Structure formats: structure tokens, C-alpha cells
Amino acid sequence: MAIDVQKIIKNLLSAYDFSGRTIIAVGGGGGQFIEYGRSARQILALDNDAEELRKLRENLKKAGLEDRFTPILGDFFEARLKGDGVLFEFCLHEMPDPKAAVRHAQTMAPDVIIIDHWPDSVWSYYTGEDRKVAGSWAALESFSLRKRQKYDAVHFFRDYDELYKKLKDQGEPSLSRIEKFRSQKDISIPMSYSIAVI
Image 1 (tube, rainbow, N blue to C red):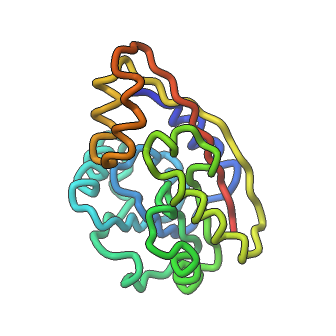
Image 2 (image 1 turned 180 degrees about the vertical axis):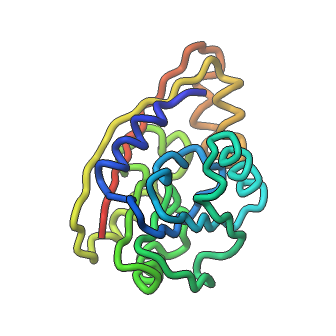
Image 3 (image 1 turned 180 degrees about the horizontal axis):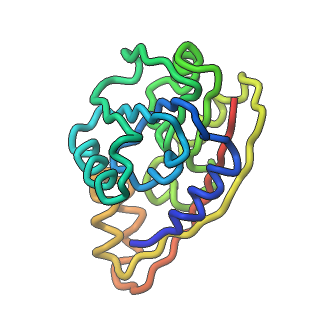
């Protein structure tokens, strides 16, 4: 699987200045976008999945960013962290109540940054998350957005097996939607996403 991670990071850095700031990264486990934190003072990487935080630690070690990030296992709604900004890293749509999540983030930091799939993203359809994604962006309509920009990317997969491996934990709706790719090679799926700042 391949996606232009560096382009996503570049777009994130152009949307918000992380320099010298303490950022609470929600859903920051895994660590595929950690390069945005290179100029920050500190990243408090909060995730409720211990395995994702293990992957994050591995990626931090490879990138030489261990001193910049503090991995924290916990529930976002129970967190009482403080910082300059809260970054929802492709996870606002996973929150049971996105509006309440943003309100809680505003008690933690003056800035809230959201990077997430866009409602018309073909990728969110195949992940089976299209309704949740649409709901999270609808929830943001009640907030005053200082910035919002849509971007386009593409997910590439060598074959169906690689696509299946990426989406196997997404559930039956996703697996039935990707069935049409079963005999294909060199699969490309458009992924639209947006970055917003509150």
C-alpha cells in the first residue's frame, strides 16, 4: 500500500504552524504522520489502542523523534491534558459524538486542528465510514472555522490481498464493497481529505 504521506504532512504544515507549540495529538498512534511534529515543542500523542502506540514508538525511534513525542494510552474524553493545540488525526469521525469531542478539545487548548476524510471521499466509502465522516463534518458546522481546505490523494495497492489486509478490520460493509477488486492488480482508490482549524 502506498499513499503520498509526505504531501499530506506538507499540507498539514501549511495549514497550521506547529513551531514551538505543545500539541495534543488524538489518534496519533501508528505514527505515519509524525514528521509534522519535528518543529513542535512537544507532542502528547493520545490513543486508546496500546498496539498503535507500540507502532508509534517504533516509528519515533526510526525518525529520531522520541524526544519530541510523549505517547499516552487513554480515553480522549477522560483526558485532562493542556496544550496549544489539539490535533484530530483522521479520527474525528470515529468519535461517538464529534461535536462533544471538539468542545472537549477546546477545554484543552485554544486551537483545534482537524485532518480527516472528506464526505465525498471514495476511500471512506470503501472503508465503510462514509456516514460517520459526513456526520463529523456536519458537526463542525456549529463551530467557527478559521480555515478549511480540501485536498485529494490516492491510495495505491498492488493487489486485492494488500487492500483486504488494510481493510479487513473495518467490518462486513467494507469487505463487501471491496469485493469488486478481487481479481485486480495495481488498484488505485481516490482519497479526499480536509484540514480545518477552529
